[in-house]
Length: 143
Image (cartoon, rainbow, N blue to C red; front, side):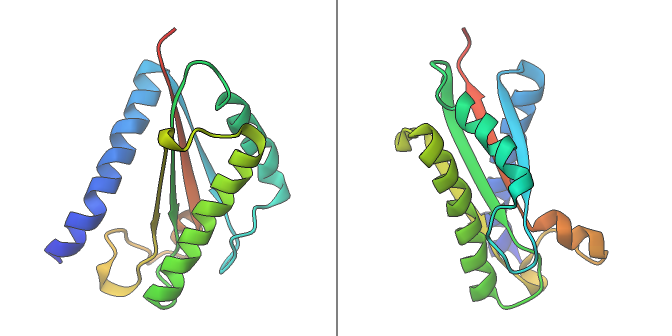
């Protein structure tokens, strides 16, 4: 169990610290894109959100973009890992096609584990929906 925390906790720490910086310093934005079960296709209703994120990534104050993709715990690890990777890159490719991102300012991570190795609890059906997502954080420099 310790090995899992060593792998996953740093991602959550980065996400937490970045989201705190966004909330308190108001120098960033955070968005979540949800996916259907076993899908990495971006729904039409999220395209406007992604268009807004892409526009912000072209700002001269743009500092970094973080994309972290998740799956629920149903299914095999290999399948979930591949699915979360596809979700992450689907969002990245969409944003890049609209903003021509500087890859040195982009951080992409995907998590696709099942069974006892996960650190989040998915005993409630709605929790599965919450983990079929990609979190996007955009950080900006002070003006």
